[in-house]
Image (cartoon, rainbow, N blue to C red; front, top):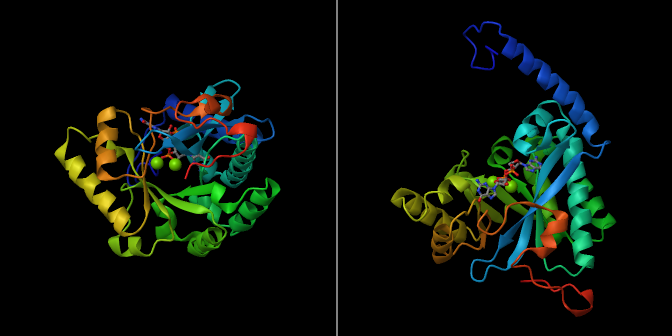
Length: 289
Ligand code: C2E
Ligand code: MG
Ligand code: MG
């Protein structure tokens, strides 16, 4: 605990520390079995077109249906999964489950452009991500442009397993790459210019102040201008109020995501969301541009 808090200090033993350490070990063991026990589920949050609120894409967000602790959000276990190495296996499960769902929705004629998944930096270490994505897409007969991978700035600053080359290969297959949580990391302007990405997601922390905080407004305006001058598609996350949506619409943001439109929902509830184009006659896929 002393090391974890920045070293050069001491921490007295407490029953609480002991419990936390035991908890971690137990969670790790449980995480390793969670895939076989089919305890993971994906929830889906729509991303809408600002002009008319039409759902044009969605983000898959992982949940762990823990037998004792209930439905856990990723904040409760992703870090641990990264630390103990199971994240690669979990990531592969997420990819397969998201592609299976995207294919099922296509068969039902649900008009969804892309489905995005979150990919941890650790998943680039082995170098086999592009091959895995390719085989998963093929297995589900999906084109590359049905899938978007959300990565974070740390991937591009650390470049594990020559991540940039892997991203280039994926983009070559039509897969979209999005930079998640933009503005919370340490991207330099020099680096931004040459990032192998197509989409930028403005972090919720900027969206929160829109409509009442002039500073947040100025920064968001600058981010929109930056994204567009780099020819990136811009998605705003964490949109909770009509006032925030209005500002983002006026600034020319390309897609909006947040509780205002819908919380992440289980797959079964997704087709009933307002803003989703009804299936075309005969169940044919009608792609919203
Ligand atoms: P993220 O990718 O930035 O996802 C957005 C998070 O914001 C989600 O939290 C979502 O539920 C939440 N959110 C969406 N709209 C709103 C809003 O209007 N207001 C507020 N307050 N929150 C909103 P969630 O599902 O708890 O996920 C947290 C993070 O966990 C994600 O952040 C992502 O980094 C990570 N994560 C989720 N699924 C996966 C996964 O399959 N693999 C990996 N490696 N990480 C994942
Ligand atoms: Mg994300
Ligand atoms: Mg984010």
